[in-house]
Picture 1 (spheres, helix red, strand yellow):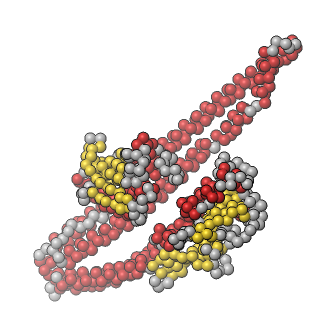
Picture 2 (tube, rainbow, N blue to C red):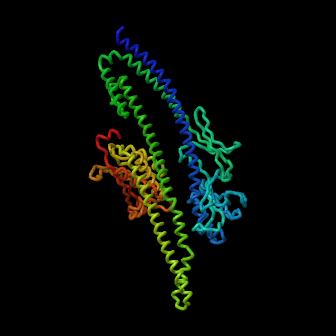
Length: 608
């Protein structure tokens, strides 16, 4: 028997056994993993739906705090400010606040105002949140607040489930006595939340005996159920999300496809073995072997060089490269998760150290306050006043002089203690500063600059802003721009900048606008760089705010709070060795953000 025949028979046996083993291995490892990923996806979809409802509660609570801690509301509840209801409780005002209901309760639970509007139709229709004229004393709306804040919850009404936020009515300084309770409510818009979260879910009337969370699998979908509770802790509805079982189906198809591909490649290899052995098979197989050895030694899954000979081995090359691309995508996802977990852990450690460092401050400040308010200081002032009066007898003057001497000694001792306390406070501040600098140095030291395909990354994250109604994005970017940076933070920078631009357009009230993304050649520290310009025709900002706009806590719009996004972006870009600038010709004239990053060397671009 010829050796080629023996090799063909041996290969046939190997291919058959290998196919069976691979099929068994894939069924035992890959298929369960796809099912696990599918369950995790279903749970994430459920979590996004729950977070969307909680976000609406938080937005309503913020409005409730603003109105509850307001002198106008406080005086209105005391029978003053007769124009309050006309000015603040009309359809236009409540629509601007994005709420449907306004409820004001007297301190004894009586309903002073119950006003609402339905904005789903063309003209606002008046609504009532409750039919009760009074709430009982034990109701959560009338409960005491440990501090001046707000609470949130859900209420089941004939108009649907309503997200509510309520707070005690105090003056603008958050002082009492409490004049009642103010509540804002918003009817949960399921269609809007589905569009926002991209999750298929619904609210079903609660029909069970007790609240529960469950996950049910069917042939074509996974249903996850979570029971929602109202402000009194009673179940009012079940939130049910549906996730298609396309992932597990794709996993089973991939297993069979892998098996079929292996069998086809084996059969073709056996049929053409004689020609391959005589001509170029051994050389090409040796090249593949060297490539695999290199992968094993370096740990980097580089694709095989393109093979244009259109035979079985070239098909294997294509399949391998496709697999390498898929594995690279999975590795990228894992890297993002690792980055997020690492950042959270580092932040927790820094906060823990800071909390420990500043714990003595309260006691020191309390001691300083007690010393300042000491009664003997008032007595010292009175004694000095009497000594200035020459019409006191000698015995009284001697007693006063003795008291002043003792008080002077006590005053010196108090001053020494105050200097000691201030020195301690300075030490605490320096310690906190060292903690922060150490955390910043550590976070920067962990990141290594890598080549990034700029056009691909920009276009990928442009969808964040492009989904907003009326906002369009235009690109002017060459296809071969590659920069050096930190991939994960740079993705978050694009997200921040594009969303800020979209919100600036929406703030104009025009209903439409354009974001223009352009990349031009630049220079950074004497080296070639790329300047990315993100320009919008939104509401802009005063030119003198171009430096302060990157300060933590600074925001150009009063309705927004925080001011953390651009501050974080500037720090992240600086950690990459880049620069971030902001320009505007003034309010209403748009803005341009210019981000400068170093270019990657030609030898590194292939790894981007």
